[in-house]
Structure formats: structure tokens, C-alpha cells
Image (tube, rainbow, N blue to C red; front, side, top):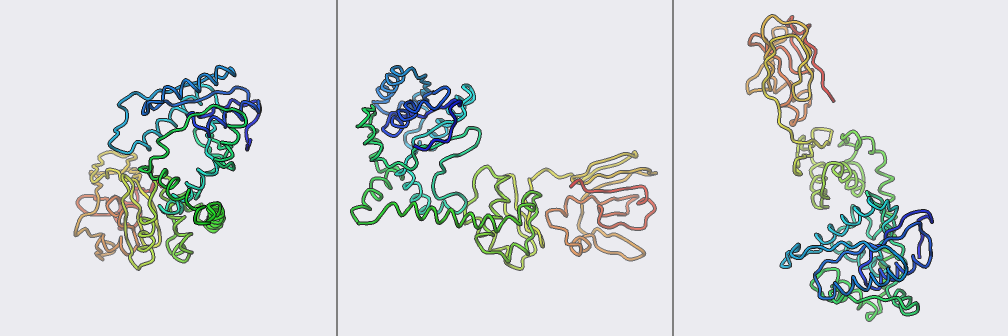
Length: 403
């Protein structure tokens, strides 16, 4: 068993009652390597034997003086006409995190083993879920709670052998044989039959290692974009010249800080396809956030309500969208508004359309309606901090962008 915790740490073991988790519990108990050991059990109340499983775990814990903490999910929580796996998993892990906080657990250990790992790799490969995550489970996952999988290098058969040798009690979950669930189908209909076809399922582990190595290389190549990702601005021209895998990684990394749900490979590839064209502008909405391509830059912005009109009657500091307007003196009211069709700025007797000025200065489309136009006595005298006329009032007005 892999051991990556210290003897003075509090440990929680997630125990369902199956052979995997009962063997894990027995191994940790025998090791004595912990300050305080807790058993965390979730009773889903979905099977007739759920109560028996809980009682079996209780007997084991009572025999060895281990504290058992049970979360019983109320009946009726799940809609059994739909898949319950995602909701059940969330409830379990919410419970683990709650106990970890209450009991000051350094680790929550789960009993995932080598066979689980091979099923995970197979599932992620065939569902194209390995591009933006490792193809296999990680032995240690840090987050609100640190999770560990000490049995990840042990096969299921080795766990059965241990349980028989050490007389560890456990109960089989008959639902694991039902092939209506994808993971069960992979386990029972595909992985289990590879040996019959004289194919080594262990090679899945080698494939995962190869992909892990390739992903590490991609991350190294993408390091040059880390600052751009941090400040939310990627150089489009530079990224266009990269390997496709690096392009995927950078786009996904740019979006991951803003999106709660993961972005699909298909969506990323569509962004890359347009990035490589001559299109000067493009945008992609993801909920309340939008990815923009504007000339040579790629950025992500939150959609917020924009100011469109502001009247300034007194000197002072004012905010208009992302701009700060400092007015030190005025005789008449100043009108601050966004652009309108036909707007013109006059400088030295020359008239130029505001839309043309913005285009010439390569102002991104998503910014054009946020830039303040300064209107004094009916005349446009400034376009944000981009360009201004020689009107005397401009010496009393300072416009700056917040970021």
C-alpha cells in the first residue's frame, strides 16, 4: 500500500462495505500510521442490503475502537428514472469535505485500485476526455480536501486475496454487475474480455503514461503564455504559429479561470479554426463570459451592463464603464455618452467619423460601445483617451482607463 501521510495526521477512510474499501480500512488500521482514524460511510438507501452493509461496517469499527461517521441520504432524494451517479457522487464528496473540516482531517482516502484505473483510462480515451485532464486518476488530489488513493497500484484480485487471507468482512454490491451504467459496461463487457482475446489490459497503463508525458511536454511549450493567461490577454499571431496541442492547452487555460464547467475539445478547436483565419473579430459566449478575438489579441470578458449616458454638472471624478473622467473646470454641462451612428470629431478644420477613428486605431469591437465620447455644448471634443480636438475644454479634462 502506498503511504503518503504522516503518523501524526488525522485520516478519514471512505468505506462503502465492498472488498476494496474494507481492505483499505484493514490495511490502514493494521499500519497504525495515523493520529486519529475515522470511517466515513454513505448510506444511499437505494438497495435492500444498505442497512446490512452499514451494520457490518459498524461491527468492524466497534471491534477496533474506530469512530464511524454515517451520512444517510433521505429516501426520495434521487429520481430513479434518470442517472443518479453524478448527484450521488456530489453528495458523497460534500459529506467528506464537511467531515474533514469538522474533524480536522489531513486526508480522505478512497479505495480506487488498478482495475478502476484501467476502466477510467479506457472511458476517458473513448469519450475524448483526456485532452484537458490526465487520462488516469491521480494518486493524490489536492483541493478543499486532500484525497489519496493508496491502492491504485493493487489489482482487484490482490484485494480479494488479502480479504480471504486476513478474514476481512465485506459485501458485494450486485449493482456493479448491471451494464446499464457506462463504467459497469466497460468493466464487465470489455475489460473482463480482453484476457480472452489475449490482449493485455495492462497496456492501458502504458498508454496513460505516454499521454501524461506528452501533456507535460505541451505544458512546458505553453509556459511562454503563462503571463498572458494571467493578465487575460493572449497574442493571437504568436499562438497561430504554435503546435495544435499547445494552442488547445493555451485556449483552455485562458478560459478555465472563468468557467465553472469544462470546455469541450470541439469548442476549443472551433476557436482555433477561426483564430487561424484572416477574420479581425470573433466572439464566443460561455454563460456570462465571452471570449473575444480582436485583431492581434484574444481575451475573456464578463458581460456587464454598460453605461450609455452621463451628465456632468460639477468638477470632480466620474466613472464611465472602464474609464475615469477627471473634470477640473467647466462652464456648461458636459455630456458623456457612447458612440452613435454619424458621430464626427473635428480637429483643425478636418472632420473624421468616430467609427473610422476607432477602426484605424484597431479598437476591439467589444470595446467600441464602452468608450466615453465627451460632448461639450453639442460638439464632440474627445473620444475617450484615444483622440481629442483642440477645444479649450480638453485642458481641463483628463480621461484614463482603469485597466
